[in-house]
Image (cartoon, rainbow, N blue to C red):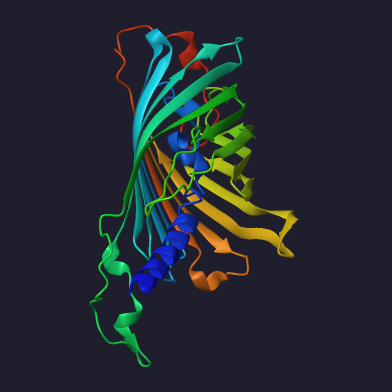
Length: 344
């Protein structure tokens, strides 16, 4: 029994460490600004509340579900933005769950009348645990399959890892373009649930884009924030974590109030075990109405996993608000419109 339990723990540790080696991702990455980069907290110069939901590979048991909720606000008098973000990620096979709460701060520096720089920092607390009831063991099976819903094994059902983490990011932007980067998990904390040392690898990302207006439906100036915008915005997001790296490359088309987007995810010039690193084609549709933006995207899997996995479904919701005194004259910085889709 001791050998059996040791083998079980060893196998469990291998599964858990592999599952936890990579952070969840969002295809609508600019609809999850605080998850992408602490420098983006409060970048709309107002306040915002957002929700993101992703269901990856819903047709197989090893699916992943990710939820994220955030709220932020920019305080123009002190050139600072503050925000809080909650993220939950669940894995289907063994019920591995990660819960995170992060506090973010960004400081806004106007470098020139056009260029703005926003460095940001996040301090986060992680709790990772396992749903022991989802595990099955050899004594629950015979040659015909599962025969006993309860195992005689007595393992530690309180498998949890708790740790603090810190991340940094920053973004340079003008009314029409931006480029930024972030490094998450600076300290590479130990995330092992079953003892030993299993570091959470640093996650690095570089992202940017360029908004190209091609007309305004209203008779007002195309630069006016009251105009119904027509534009195309090419964007990219490269990220690397441990032995994993990936690139999202595509564009948004804005036909106010409609948003349309398509991206390719992969690095086709890089091969893994002789197979080209191409993961999916992502299609997005969204609607902007005054303070509210809603988006839906679908990842069409083109890797060897196939579309039989169900791809990935993702929904985003963003609501903007203002806590500023409406009687107070606005500062010039409010006239510097953020070009990032979803959050301007």
